[in-house]
Length: 58
Image 1 (cartoon, rainbow, N blue to C red):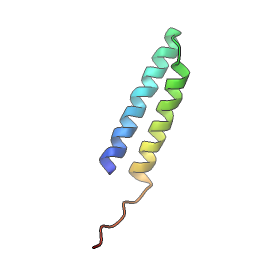
Image 2: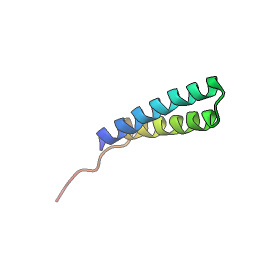
Image 3: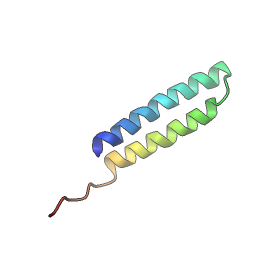
């Protein structure tokens, strides 16, 4: 599950970069992409470092 959190964080970073590029070039949805990237980055970091995986007891 930790790998998935890292993937979400990386996608968030890429979306932030894309949002900045879109905003600077004056394209539509730059701010929306930037916001979505920030949310994904926060979720990925929370999943990777804050949440503890459940123990697999059987």
